[in-house]
Length: 149
Image 1 (spheres, rainbow, N blue to C red):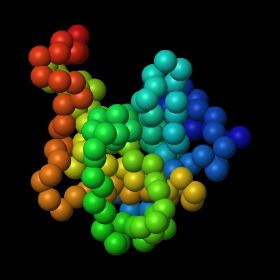
Image 2 (tube, rainbow, N blue to C red; image 1 turned 90 degrees about the horizontal axis):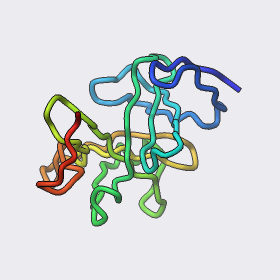
Image 3 (cartoon, rainbow, N blue to C red; image 1 turned 135 degrees about the vertical axis):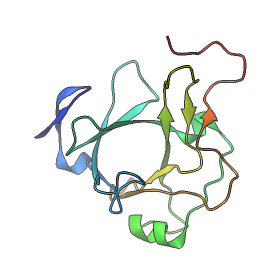
Image 4 (cartoon, helix red, strand yellow; image 1 turned 30 degrees about the vertical axis):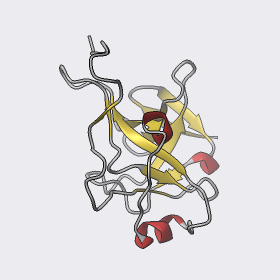
């Protein structure tokens, strides 16, 4: 078993086969390419992606279908090639969630979902070239009291 430091979870032990690799990094975090999926009891369907290199960097993700069951993925051929997926294969779709920023409600980035090839653990953030979805899609319906406190 390997180990990495996490500001949120302490020392995390993991098997190297569990690592999710982003060969191109993530927009704004291009040098961060290796992440460990961390699940915590009682936090499903959330999945935390902890950087192997940077203890302070941990993304909160949620399945896209939990946010928008009718979501339509749009990926470039380049992104498909990077993760080794052809149009006949399926991949795991997760979106980055922003749980709380001052008075804002929790949101999810549907414009740039994370697409993970479950077979080889290669991933990309597939940013759409249109405005069909938002980077700040509300996680809860308008008027629902879900603010951070």
